[in-house]
Image (cartoon, rainbow, N blue to C red; front, side, top):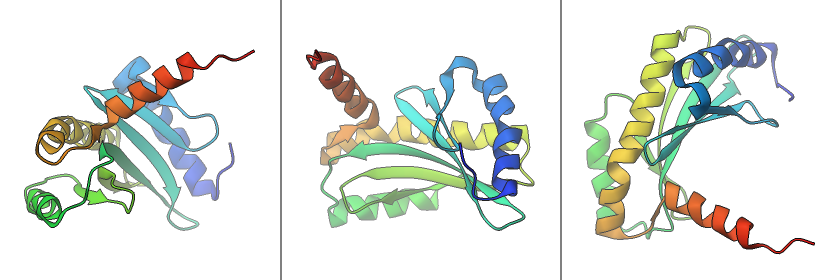
Length: 159
């Protein structure tokens, strides 16, 4: 795996054992990028270590909440209103109809308890809101998208 800066590498190496200690087998490191996936409930929180400068990095915890949903003004207003009440992080949306929840912390000052709070807050928020959003506006929960992908891969006839 390649790192853009020494600070990014140091941050990744600092949090890797913490994630294994905190979440055990639920925390899985990606082989090709400084990312860990942590499964909690119906949510998968991705812990991404990104360079911030030559001397520091950030840790962004992000969870896809709902995919394939029409981003109506009503839905966007709902997400903005919910952001006001969030202690850690906020909702966002991309141009492909995907809603996510994320929180970012500073790598150099992060400790194990702060990392734990961030991962749990992001995953639990995604897990809490995915069913409500799908029921009101449609789309698919992140877990459903993953399940469909696994079924598709499993049904491929590879010779």
